[in-house]
Amino acid sequence: MEAKLNNHIHYPAALVNVNGVISNSTDAKISVFDRGFLYGDSIYEVFYSENGSFIFLDEHIERLYHSAYLLDLQFSWTKEQIVAQILRTASESKIKDAYMRLVVTRGVGALTLDPGQSVGNNYVYIIDNKPVYPSNLYDQGVHLFISKVLKTDKRSVNPEAKSGNYLNNVMAMHEAKKQGADDALLVNSRNEITEGTTFNLWMSKENKVLTPAITSGLLQGITRQKVIEICQKENINFEETIIKPSQLLEADEVFITSSTRGIMPVGRINDTIYTKHKESGSATKKIASLYKKLLTKEQSKGKYKYE
Amino acid sequence: MEAKLNNHIHYPAALVNVNGVISNSTDAKISVFDRGFLYGDSIYEVFYSENGSFIFLDEHIERLYHSAYLLDLQFSWTKEQIVAQILRTASESKIKDAYMRLVVTRGVGALTLDPGQSVGNNYVYIIDNKPVYPSNLYDQGVHLFISKVLKTDKRSVNPEAKSGNYLNNVMAMHEAKKQGADDALLVNSRNEITEGTTFNLWMSKENKVLTPAITSGLLQGITRQKVIEICQKENINFEETIIKPSQLLEADEVFITSSTRGIMPVGRINDTIYTKHKESGSATKKIASLYKKLLTKEQSKGKYKYE
Image: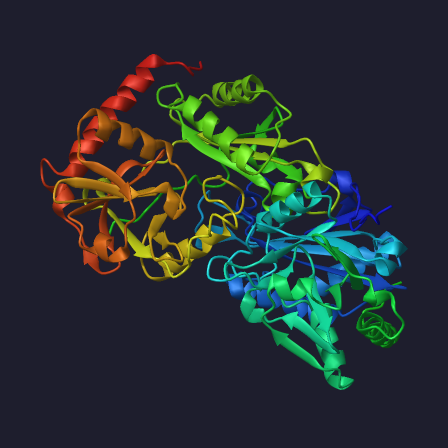
């Protein structure tokens, strides 16, 4: 039986904080004039905590600011205020291993696309238990499908901004599910692999590890960046480059990275089956082990601890 | 002094209907778990009434269903239920010349992109007075800027679906405003004119009227379709075709069409000034006059009248 992906927070979630007011999920609402609701004019981050301590939060906040920069979205709150509400919400939830989704919109305003007419922001924090992926996804691996939906060109809506415009990925995911896969990979108009719907992609071939270059049009994942640093530090032969689907289908191993998944092997892409990641000493196992050590180190720092 | 665009409904608007519950604007809210809010996973229509009668409502409802089809979004309400709430909201508002925005989302659900995990829909109707554009916009014309933001490719997110993913247009509008223009035009990756942020584009050159073909990647506007029918009926020399920016800058006349604007002349694109639309017998004046007659006829039908 094939492993089924369970990569989501069920609705209702535990708690929601809207602009500093914490409530349960069913009471958590936003104005219908919010530009996030009307136009997807928002940015977001997903991060998590382990044992009451947020992991790589500095990096996620930095990327939130990068998304804001790319969309010229101004914050009415300071970085300290944004972070304080993360910790306050987590503390109130009593969840020690938490998933958090932070959405910042361009606020409400007149019914016009012009962002100059918007007023302030809306800040939404959703917290729940960190999702637990079925263990066989880490053994057998996830089943991906290369979507016919092309990744949005960076000259149209830059995928480097983690925004509220996710129909591109929604439709790719929808297609993948109809094909019986767990999730989708997207190529750009030059038929270069970019990323998955909510994760970065990696492959290894003849002792070399490859991941699509940012220039192919993709989000700079936090876990992706951590794996790059691991490769550099550990002298693992590694390259950010253009990857075509044909190369991927001839890879020795394929794995994906995301904040909630960590390092997850890929067991199948379309009709190609991958099994080498199961062997001891595989690139996937090696990198997963090094990443786990990094996580332990990060957690021990306890910079974003809450009671 | 240049004419300034006033093409929007101010916040707060008059009334909002959320899933059949009518309230004032400030009370009108939606769950933060709504997929429209989280992913822009929604569709919408903007239409209006004159003298207590909705104009071209059949066409707008048909396009709403086309958008739903393109995104594989299912309705929990029937067409009759959707329309009944339009009339009920308009009636309760007492506004006879009304602007209405109808948003239908894929509802709430687990925090996953997979639309298969969503439950039902959310239906939001926003009503207010129909916006009145400054009369000099119909005399002098609107000032447009050809954006460096490329129109999203139809293979990524199809612009033929009027969806909640509008960052592409938001960013183009933002750029146009910074350039001192009223609004933006977008080209695709082949440098073909597609459409404006919320309107279709037309040009006339040597007694021939041209508009970008749907294959360039754009929304099939209701007013656009009406003007096509006018051209066919009145034997106006007309073509849907590829239009490059260079052709546009050499046009005799340029005008835009949208439901709320009707036919509006363009007075300037980047640094090119257009004045021929002001001459009596101009293509713009002729088509605007024929369109006005069509509106009168439509209104007299009174199919979607409310008290």
